[in-house]
Image 1 (cartoon, rainbow, N blue to C red):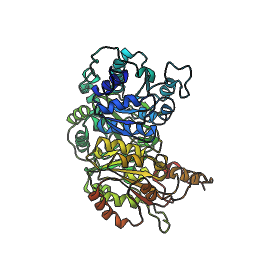
Image 2 (tube, helix red, strand yellow):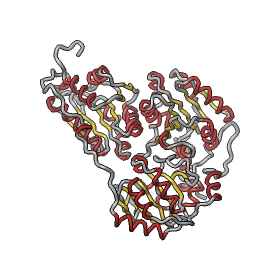
Image 3 (cartoon, rainbow, N blue to C red):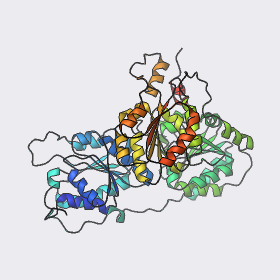
Image 4 (cartoon, one colour):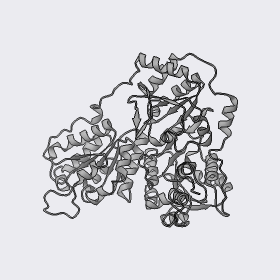
Length: 553
């Protein structure tokens, strides 16, 4: 190594990460990780240096989801670790494999101002913590951290005192085998014939079937099988929010299930008598709290089928199997039949229906967020990557039915806003040849707007679209519904275009939606990154809020 007569521990630790085929790391440096990070960069890893530790981990989350592999981030000890506490439970609940090199306070110091007991802080979020205090064993510990992240599909944080990292390396010359060579590779699980027969009888008795696919169906490659099952039963299709777009080209897809269901989806779900949930976690928000299909039984096809999820009974009928193999076996066991509710009229109804037809009075000079989404849906190229953030605006941005699932990302399991710009950076790093479009709200973007500088510095191809209603959208609508003062939720329309220019990026306040096609053409020709600020009315309330918080009279 440069300027070193003898290898240091941090040299070997960096090599252990390189051996795990880590090619991208999201980082914010400090005493406990900077030597290791410098060596990792020298060994060819692309380092994305962010401006806030939370953003390093959140970007790694999106990178892991997009690449279906372990995401890697690094922060320093103490205050660097405490900044991870919002992102970690989100990653745990989204089942994302991550490895975080966090360092620890030096062991040799009797007192260190940044020292805290990191392990209980990390494990309280549901993530795992690995203390590595014996240098000779550290490479094995790193290998095991990657094994654990992959096997358990959750974050693993590694704590290594930074004075130990600087010691000369006296351990073995050879590193252990990387985790990829040890990880079990189980084959897809086929269903039991008796379970297939019972499920087939259940479907044979149903008249109004809906096949709902989740991320498990996406990962198993079960999209085509789900379409075939719906066609065989005369049924309709829908997805969970993370799987949104899996059936974007099917005329009988009624959209997203749960909090994001469009009007036509709610109309047909109330008539359903059987929902076949394929590779779904059956989260509370994916089922509308049990309200969306009051007449329907549920069949859950999954390698780990559920009866109860997040406090509600979700399914009484189960088929334990790989999503694709289970659906294919079930379809083969069913005779072709006429009937169901497929027709040209229903296809036309699905195609032509607005996601939300409620009428609002829009103030002069402001835009309807639904119209903003329609304009973007029509103008944005279909091969651009879409990233949907959290908050009130995310309902509107989810209603882009022509967009394929492989070009869409959202992570919403913890319900936190402020993650969108980090997710966009993670996707841009995972897909450097693509343009990424972030859809975010003003309140969410404000939380980590400093990462616009990171986007510019690393030349991440990102278009940031801000749905700016001058407020925390969910909170202002809930307060109004309760008849309470809205102070603390309304802040006014800040100038995101000006903020973008301050960070060295082009910024545009879009007032006329007729300009959107030209803006898209110009941006596509110029490349790079930019911020578009759409000032929208805060009088438009999403259906999610209207259903959950009707105005008191």
